[in-house]
Amino acid sequence: MQTGVNFNHQTVQLDGETFSDCEFAASRLVYSGGELPIFDNCRFDGCEWKYEEASARTLSYLKLMWAVGAKTAVQTTIKEITVATR
Image 1: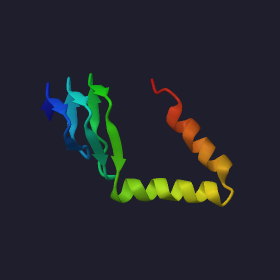
Image 2: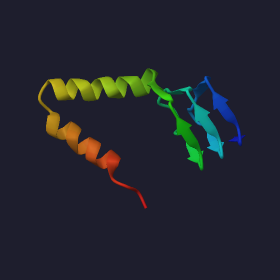
Image 3: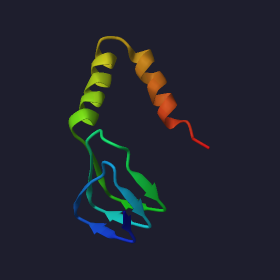
């Protein structure tokens, strides 16, 4: 668990990590498709979000679906992602 850490111009692996009261500035945040990270009261400023391995393949699959005409399915997925959780 990372608590109160300021990440500045760093590459940070996110998979399976917990971040509490951290600040990320101009950093590269990398998710590879493993266990979801947990962010509690964190701030992000000018970060680059990178997707590698399994997460990158999932995005490539969604792009393929879009390209072959399954736009409605991709749009439905985006709606599910953007709905606020309670």
